[in-house]
Length: 235
Ligand code: FPP
Image 1: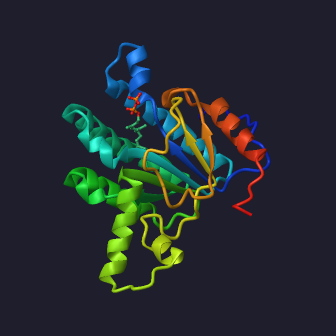
Image 2: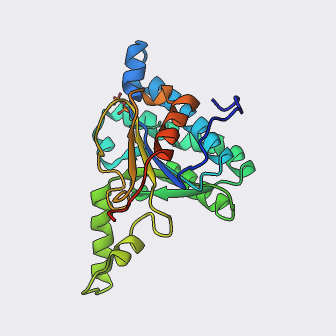
């Protein structure tokens, strides 16, 4: 998708797109490949999606790369995902620098091994002054855990009366706009603990294709669907 620069993007685009990249394992299984091959293919789709969103002036792109629950997967798969996240981001850095992209890390990054953590923090800091698209990667992330974390911070500050603004300001996403469009691939109709607070007024789009197959055409279908919806925010 990255090399094809033609565009069928609708005029009204979301400012913030958030994606649950699901279906890597099934994609690999269908090809009799190990699950890790699916994650590798998924990383390539992630890179293409970043390119597309960046080229189309999307302000924020958030991706769910590793959930709090993913720690319970087979040890080998977790290790392979760690390796892919660490090495993948390192390899991708020159591109992110050239494209003026900012990196935000959303989740309990402290749970990662020091070497992966180091790559993540260094990459984020190196890109901090960039002024282009904000790329948010959710890692060791869970929406409920994030809300609990915010409440604990507020409790530690001695807050007695808590407002919605207080909560937003203590989430990992503080300072970022809420998502306008949440996409989930692989034909599953679940939220899976993703941006629970932030997605209160988001539009949802569920695609049947598996994440590695979610190319430009599929993304444009999601954008087209979004552009036709009338958002009322409960009014
Ligand atoms: C869900 O598919 C996908 C994941 C748990 C990993 C997603 C990670 C990537 C696409 C790599 C991107 C990395 C970065 C740093 C952005 P699944 O394994 O649950 O698939 P299944 O439901 O078919 O088994």
